Image (cartoon, rainbow, N blue to C red; front, side, top):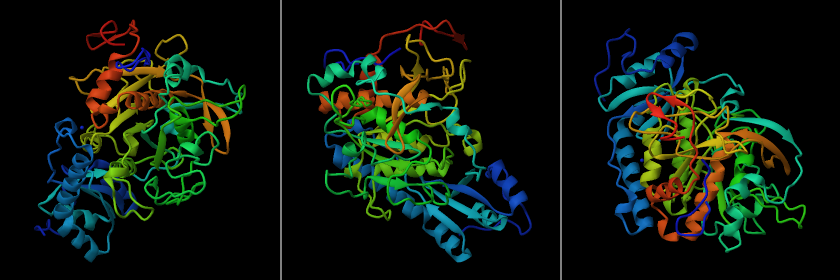
Length: 473
């Protein structure tokens, strides 16, 4: 099915006692991958999950979005700071490298077996999740998107943008203005001609990356290095995704690159993959940044600067630490609880059913998007549902995702295919929805409901687990 309308317009489309000396960490609370790394490398990365977690209110329960979002962030930060205080003091005494989180009450740790034994002895610690240091490879995003070529010629308005009906809204003056979209991806080439004017850090004369960019890659050695001070993309993927959401180079008729669905919207970004490789910690860190963006030093988080929409054209694989399907659910639910719509790519593991099986697309708090071809059929490689959790039928929407032309690093343009390319069509469509219906801001449930109600329905011949394609594509 294809995203088609905003319902209020024409038709557009959630210091304890230590263990006995010489014993291994409690295997029931320590991820298998951590023990393997400890055995082979002598140290490992892990995510220490603490027990205390605050309740997350529904954003629709508040009439003041800014106050509600500040309350959510304050609660998350307060619970984490209190719960983690003694643990962090212990880690400091031991000289252990760590990084605390508050979007989820957890602490990233790189330590030895003795360190993890000490951590697991603490009563406030629930368990330790894996955050594996995996070899660099191109597999993660290859499962979500594929590169088809650079230097593709302009076609004025891109076919996918045309197919979802966006230009009809542009003619009514609805361009996504007043809306900010967060791009969680491999980074973005912010100075690309089709993206520069839409970058929230650029005012037409000067640029500031504070509150508009964060790099969650702290030990990378690729083209962007680590902790890049400005938006950078070492994989083309994030730049391509950003282009489909907002891209427009403003060129002359006949050669203008109108590649984005919501050219009046603004974007901010966070790099959560190093050349296409992520980890649970990287993915969570970017979601935390979008919930309350910070300055370039990571200080003074400000939920008032949060985007209305976050596009997630990635999936977290087992070898990135997502062997537990709920590992990122709390982070995703925290973002939605703050009134932010999360749009997520379904993944590229089709054509079999039951292949939509990795975070964040599996969660009810994500609006999950699959890819369709030019004939509005589900793309052959796109992941199918019904999903991991029996109560959920996924995906939620389909959008153009085959041979999509968008921005490439260095001012170029090229084509890519996959659900990664479909998701930003819907994120851009959501920006148009909010421009047309600003009263929906801060209410992602209703936004998702409106978007799900808008598509052209397409049946599927496939059936899996008793769910017929005539019931849900």
